[in-house]
Length: 410
Image 1 (tube, rainbow, N blue to C red):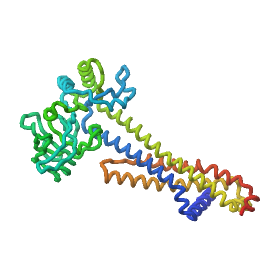
Image 2 (cartoon, helix red, strand yellow):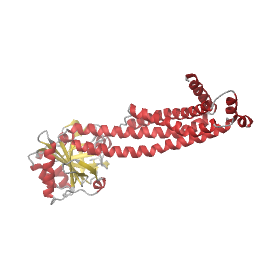
Image 3 (tube, rainbow, N blue to C red):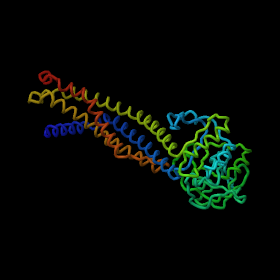
């Protein structure tokens, strides 16, 4: 049996080498499909780990308050469904909500994440379209984000005109890495740069904006220069004990009373935030990978079509083999092996291409795709299965050919 399999593999490789261009075009659909699936799933896994790492950095006792009713819960408080459309509405969080949360004894630190519309500029009239965010002095501790240079502002009067900037602002606006002491102008208000944040990774705080391209100023100053028009799109709070669920319930009750018993907001612990985000990423990844997998089906159809052509072209060869004693089973295994090898080689090339795409994304973007061995193994197994499935019909046709008629074929 081993020698038969070896001969089948040898004949399959000879057939592929004899028509290299046709063989490559045949496996191209498999190559694209496998590469797309590898890239899509790796990207989803990388984002999941980045977000998970970002949440762990912020601490398990950090609570996220968001506008809109993003989740539905059962009577015990467990999340049973997600309402993604709620995230598309306008913010329902106000400064009053922020003050109510600050009053709670179960909460120690609070920071709003508010956005105002403003163009950042320098005294040399260089301008940058960046995100202007109003936060409190507790933001670094709640977000787990460290400063690369300088220091963060506190709530003293001496720090009202202080700004912290992301790395991209330093590079693109000031054209230097450490512009400490430089002046940044926001709506004709001058702020002194006192710190530069370290590189922000992809996390839930930057889901809507690139925080590396953001300017952070005290929340009260953001309200003042915007005429109280600063929009709060998220509030971060830290539980005073090791049980953030209790603080989350207190926040929910306080905001429900403030909103007239209407829960047009969502309070999530870090564990729930990670669960919600992982589920969202899994759905998005599955959707993209499903679309990419269509290329595998197309590739399988291409393999089947070419194998039918190959069977027709090699009818006389089949007749000769049968006249020399080859059985239907041997003819069947020969052509099925050839289809499987074409698909397998396409899968290997697709994996290499997918890993190269991951490398390019890692080098040229802020994304960090992660290709695990199970992903690679499943992709390779799927590619081989495609060849076996779509190669079955041509192999059956070859096995059923009449030897006498085959020998007469010109």
